Image (tube, rainbow, N blue to C red):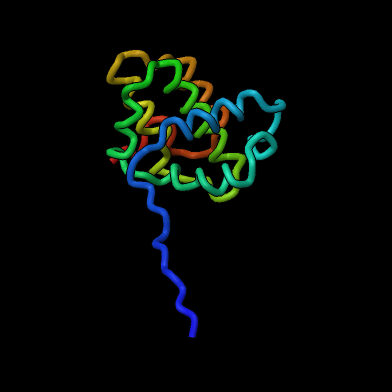
Length: 130
């Protein structure tokens, strides 16, 4: 009788900023078009966990500058629309990242307009009203 070893499922308790920023950089460098054309299948499957994390998970991103937070906001706004399984509704990371920019008083009206023009998620950019 053969005995195999059990390995627990990979958990995502902390934000892997380098992996996230690498995905964003790759998506920005790709051909204009859907994110699915510039991200690998592994990136698409491996990154889906980002979409429904609690607010505390995103605190690690607070070390980033405003420009990187804006890149993340744009990436997640488009990812939710273009990548299968990346829908997040009221748990969208965009909401938490926008809050960071608001706390810094650097959330521009132009970014709000861009978000609204590129999503059908009614919770973006501010989250649930209640």
